[in-house]
Length: 283
Image (tube, rainbow, N blue to C red; front, side, top):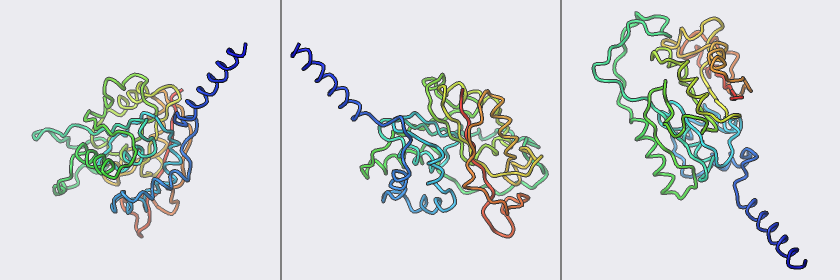
């Protein structure tokens, strides 16, 4: 009997030690932890400037991330959000930053793509060359590694929006999907958004979250002003996402600006754009 009690005691102590050693995945990271992430000295000056507009403290609190999650950042672009998610999830998690393949040199441009309410606008001059998203993500990962920051590994994924998840993630392997300030662009890019949303639904685990932020359009405009004002009507977006099977879960109002008339790309007089952040859950 004494031997059995000793074995039981060692078993309990071992279990407790393992529980303490494992990531606290039951609770999202705290506000204090987020503040520490944002104050990290290795973050770039450009990201800190971006913080003034993006309000990452409130954004990460709304994300409710936990250590050890698997996250996919759709339309990762320069990786501002991807990096923050990698820092929040930590080294026991994994983050994927998706971007679409570059269009071919001779790819046809539609005369009136969906989302462009004025297709006869003159073609703008070519913008300056930006780094491809995989290059930007690799640079971020290397910088954090050099600074000794413990973050989730970042994997660049180059896939079309209609099928954005690599095979190893495509069926119930993802905890959170983010799409920040780019859903509206899918309108004038002629992306099959229904296919993309269905792919996100399949890739997420039950209880997983799909979080989208975008520039708010006026009621009744849908996605018709995506190519001109770079806005989308929130109710229209919610309807599209819910059609894939998602359940609306929450809305963040920390980027709202009721004074924005929402009738221009850049508000006049100058002010922050009215923006919304919405969270959906896979039942």
